[in-house]
Length: 184
Image (cartoon, rainbow, N blue to C red; front, side):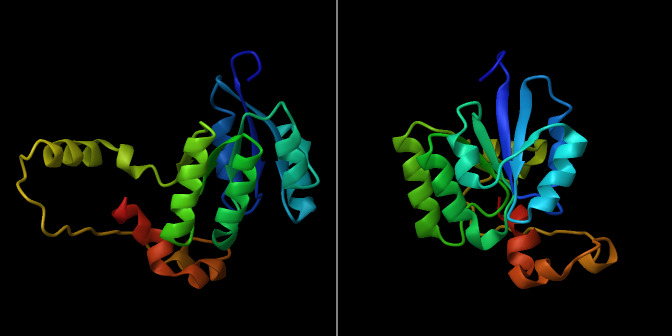
């Protein structure tokens, strides 16, 4: 941590990266140090816009003592592998959804983070919303009685109507892409 700011590195410079980068620059308590991506041109383009360094690979990024936290924006099926590498390097992690592709891998990552006394968190953070917090409090207080069934609904247009490259989302399916919001 430099100047009481959390020093951030981002791995994965695909579609969602620019949204994260725009938001990171809005906060005074964080500092973007650098980016890495398997397609170095993507990292180079964003680094030029956001005035940060480009690391040749994740190993180099996590070896940098300036980095406190790594934001993982890589493709779903490599999340567990990427997160483990970050944690093994003693860096905190925030990852896009999902944390892992199965419970066993997710549990292993949580255990590793706890063992190393590191923060590990994952999108989506919809559970932090007012409605979700109110429901959680009422359930915990027993106000709603024994919960036997939960109904959730997601309403947004078909992805191909608003996303410039929707094909990768079809690969993971609706549960991984939007169903996870209702589940959290």
